[in-house]
Amino acid sequence: MRNLPHQRILGIALGLGLFFQTQAQTFEERKQQVSQALPLVDQLFKEYAEKNHFPGMSYGIVLDGKLIHTKGVGMANLEQNIPATPQSAFRIASMTKSLTAMAIVKLRDEGKLQMDDPVWKYVPEMKNQKYATKDSPTITVRNLLTHSAGFPEDNPWGDRQLGISEKEFTDFLKKGISFSTAVDTEYEYSNLGFALLGAIIKKVSGIAYQEYINQQILKPLGMNHTYWEYTKVPQKELALGYRWLDGKWIPQPLEHDGVYGAMGGLITTMEDYGKYVAFHQAAWPTSDAPEVGPIKRSSVREMQKPWQFNNLNANYQYQSGKKCAMVSAYGYGLRTSVDCEGRRMVGHSGGLPGFGSHWYILQDYGLGVVSFANNTYSPMSYINIQILDTLLATTKLERYPIQPAKVLEKRYVQLVDAVKNWENAKSMNIFAINFFDDYPMSILGKDTKNFQEKIGKVVKIHPIKPQNKLRGSFIVEGEKGKCEISLTLSPETPALIQEYHFRVL
Image 1 (spheres, rainbow, N blue to C red):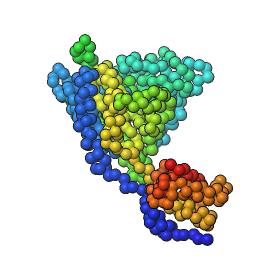
Image 2 (image 1 turned 90 degrees about the vertical axis):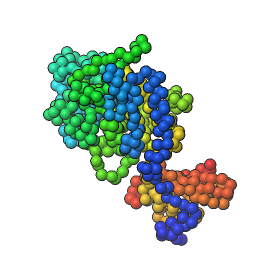
Image 3 (image 1 turned 30 degrees about the vertical axis):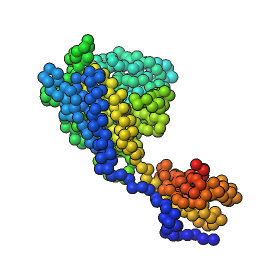
Image 4 (image 1 turned 45 degrees about the horizontal axis):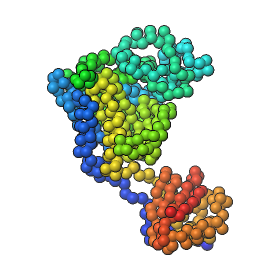
C-alpha cells in the first residue's frame, strides 16, 4: 500500500501531459482582440442611426472595467449644427434608475435603512394606502427597487411627471394610489416606485437625492459632466431631443428637474456614463482585489441579481437569425437576462420624449455596450444586443476563466493516480467519508476497465476544466477515443473527493 506525496504525483501528472489551467489572457490581449472588430461596430451603429432617423447618437464599448472605444454620429443640436460626440450630454431617462438604486444600496450598506423596511417608515403618506386586495403585504423598499409594489405600469404617464415639485408629489400620494396587483405578486414597471425611492434617499440622508447621488456616486467615479437640470449643461454640450414626424425632425421640449428625476432625469455624456457601466462590469469576476468604488463589488452584484421574474421568451431570435430562448428578470434598477447558451446580460434601457438609450454588459465575458440617441424612444436595445452578439461571433472572445481552488488542482492530480490503481485508493486519504459507500471498489474497477477498453491506451490527459472552485472535469484521450472524468469536492477542510463520474465521449 502506498501514499504518494503530492510532489511525486505532480511529477507523474506532468509526465502524462497534465496542466492545471491555461494562462488567462491579459487585458491588452483581449483589447486587441476586440479592437479588430471596432470598424464593424462603427459601421453597424452608423447604418442603424440612418435607418431610424436619429438626429444624433453617441456610443461606447466597455471591456474588463474600462471604456475602450467611443464615437459620435450625426448632430446633437440640429438648429445650431452641433455634432454629437462622446462629450455630448444626452438625457438618459430610465438608465437613471440604477443610480437611484445604488444610492439606496449604499445607505443600506451603511446601516441607515433595510431593504425590507416598510416604505411608510420614510414616506408617511404611504401608510394608509388602499391596496389591490386586503391580503396584500406592506410595500417595502425592495418592492420599489424590483417593480413589485403593485403599482400599475406608468409609461408614458410617468415621463410627463419629471419636473413636478415635492408638494405636488405629496399631494398626489395623499389622494391615494391606484393599484393594479397585490403587493409582491407580479412584476410591473413603475416610475412612481423610483420617485418614492428618491424621497427615501432624502429622508434618510438629509439631503436631496440629486445631491446625495452627486456626492456619493458621481464624484467618486469621476463623472464630472453629469447633470440633473438641463439649464446647467453648457449649451455646446447639450444634446437636444427630437421626434421624427412626417419626414422631418420636430424639436421636443426638455423637462426641468424635479421629484421624478430619480426615475429618469439624468443628463450625461458617453465618457461619463461609460465609467459607471465599467464599474458595474468590474464587479466580475469575483476576486480578492481591494474595493475601489462607491459601493462594494458584492453590492453591485446584488443589484444585478434577478430578484423579480419578468419574462420567458421561448422563441427569442437574435438579429443574426439565431433562435435562442431568453429568460428575464429585474434586479435593483436593472434588467437581467440569461439566454439558451447561458450568457448572462444585465443593463437597462431609457426613453423619454426626444431621447432613447440603453446599456448592456455580458458579465462572464467582461464586455459591454452603451448607446444614446436624441430621437423619441429610440430603440437602442436592439442595436446593442446586435453589437454584443456580433463582437462575440467575430472576435471569439472567451468567457472569464473560472479559477479553481488549489485543493481542486491537487485532488485532480491525485485522482489521476487513483484511477490507475483503485486498490491503493483508500490509503491515499483523498476521498470523503461517503465515497466508497457510493462507489464500491468492485464498480470502480469495472468502470475503469470498461473505459480503458473503449478508449485504448492513454495518450493525453487534458487540463481540468473547473465549473467552480470545488468542482470540475477533465478529458482523458486514448488511441481509440476519449472519456470525461468529473469530480466534486466536499465542504470540509481540507476538501475531499465526494463524487466521481466518467462517461465515454
